[in-house]
Every structure is written in structure tokens, then in C-alpha cells.
Length: 163
Image (tube, rainbow, N blue to C red):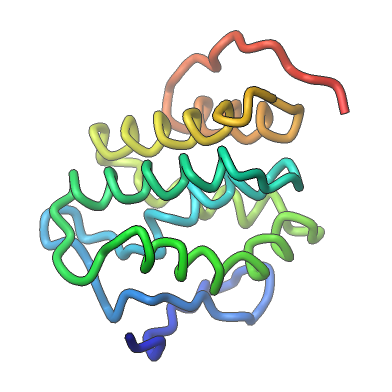
């Protein structure tokens, strides 16, 4: 498996490039790269600073379902999805902890603005990941609230857990 493809986030939080286990796979149907699609889902795992097994399992399931729904071709398996996560976890964690956190999140969420079925699928996936560990924290709520606001949804009325 080649890790040669590097997706650069222009004007992003840092100059650390996103790494991907997926060569240069872009959906012919939608035109988005795997990196662009998996970053919002990874944010839902990383945002609360507690990566738990249920969230990782749900990330893998949601990512695989999303890429399958969008008819991505190539070597997309649970293993390559988890490799992608491992390769990009530090980059996303750094961005979420950095002073340009909101800019990073905004860029990750706004690239899908004209594709309603894709937005719905990503929003549902992010929500499923956020609640998969049976805890819904303030940071997760803020992320879901941002996505809901950007995409025209109402934030779900889940109880927010104290820290």
C-alpha cells in the first residue's frame, strides 16, 4: 500500500500535510477526495479528547458505509480506513487543540455546501460517532451544533454530559 499521496490543506492550521492510505481516490460521482470525506468523521472522534473503542468502531463503520454509498473505487477496507485515521490523527488533534480550531473545523465542514444527500450522510455519520460511546460532551455538542447550523439542521436534543 502506498502512502505517497499527500493532500495539502491550503491556508490551514499548519503546514503538516494530510496523509492517506488511499492513492489519489476521488469519487467520480461527487468529486470529493477520501481525505475530505473522512476528516469531519474523524473530528467527531477526536473533538472530545477521549478516543474510545465504540467511537473508533463507529468511525470505521460510518466511513466504510459513506465511501460505499458514494461508489468509491479502490482498496477501501476497514484496514485502510483505520490506517488513514492513524496517519491523520496527530494532524487533526493538533488542529483541534490549536488557536485556529474553528477555522479548521469550518473548512472541514463547508466543502460540501451544495450536495444535500452527502451533507445528510456526513451529518448522520458524525452524530452516530459522537453518541456511540453513550456520552455526549460539550465539545461534541459544539461540533454537531456547528455542522447543524452550517447545513440547515436542528441540533438534536441530547443531554450533554459534564466533564
